[in-house]
Length: 223
Image 1: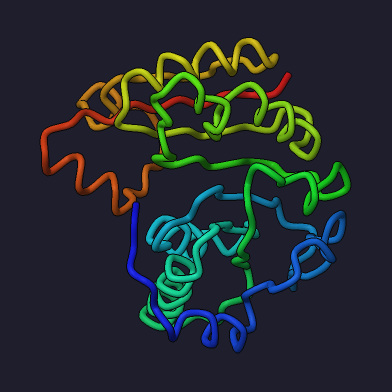
Image 2: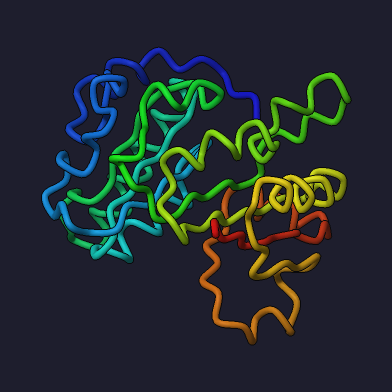
């Protein structure tokens, strides 16, 4: 998603208590930043405007969350959405962190000591051209990186509107030694609603649904 430059974003982020400006310094130490250090640690890759992470974090104080994006403007909006959500629920922000980083270089900020329990990848760039497919966040090359800090039996939750990306991702996960626990080509169908899956809709998800595009989703487990 392209977004206009927002001059206020970087200053606001730098003043925020839950923005991490130097994520490389936290490698192997992310759990220590949180008030409740023993909570499970969930990671969202490409958080966009933050609607998803804001809802998840405020509704699950028993879990610690980290959200990453590369664009200051996106993170600025995510920061504001998180603050609004917590204010509306009259809660203190103590279980979510946001940071700016290039996900292709993610091993510079996470390692096995961080022991991530779950990764969320929501509506990432499909990179449809063959020469660009290695940039996909679900590509085998990236999955091998995630395995370096995803704990044993950790899970990846993936959602997309793109058919080719979804079909390819199924193969990527299987090639990287993940077990597909659940997959659907219509996340919002009545059948899937009967399965106990918490689904917080992202901004992209709302847009695609309004256009009649079916949402594809899967859960993959590292075994």
